[in-house]
Length: 116
Image: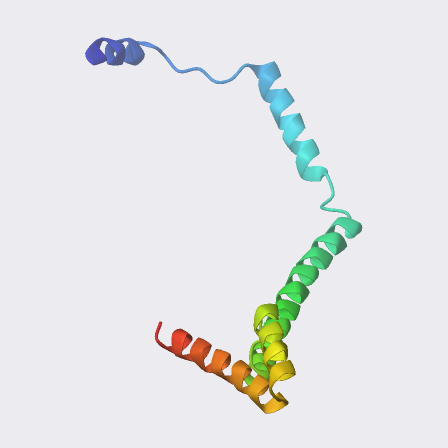
């Protein structure tokens, strides 16, 4: 089957494109190449979008860095249940025992995080 197709193709003589079609294609190419590049506002919009993306990345990095510093300095915020439990313990005993409850929770969380 392939031999038949190859024999048929070898017997055909190549010919160029039709003259009117060639002229139309060349005219279309000339128009496209003569067209001016992007308008200034398109270029400015593209640069503004790129700058906005970079600014967003920088602000995200700064926010993460600031949050990490805050957590390193003050620790992570306590859940509302732990704060409520500490207040209940404080109300029945004293402030020192309430602080002890929060310290115990933080130590338990640190042990759990460090064991991972």
